[in-house]
Length: 220
Image (tube, rainbow, N blue to C red):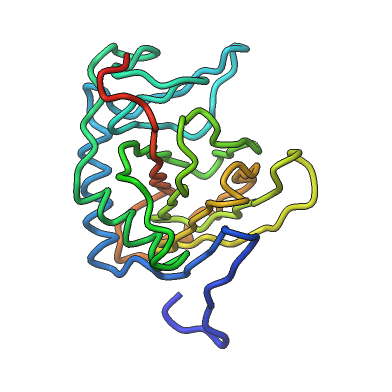
């Protein structure tokens, strides 16, 4: 929203988990959206993720650097068209480094980011409570939001159930979680359709999540 009675303020949702509203300005949001549209095109483009139990995730996904599939990483889209995963751009890694420094302070600078998972949510998409635990590193996770507002549920490291905190993530918001909250359960129970800023030109929600793999460059 362009004007509010009470401006949104940054908040530490849990130790090491920080929400920074409006971190991405309009130009950066447009740049990220243009990049996401290019990454979503085949080969190795936007796909529906199928779980080992035969279900499907309602949020569609494209990966950069390393391809994630339940529950591992590969260099090719092993559960899709088999194409090599798209490269992870240096400028996106630098954006992630800046995000961590701004959210957690200069002493929290992570190793170079080498994974991006981009999830696209339409009006009916959800994401169940889960942990980002398939990496071999515990560097902070960086999350950028574009488009529709969502209800983001950030929980604890022990269980998918309470206690958790619900946070409204809008277009341009940053959420970083590391340290004692790095392996906390989190999810997206709801998207608010039609809430994206009109100037962005996006119907739906994009979430760009950056991670450090801890994997060897020559691993398969």
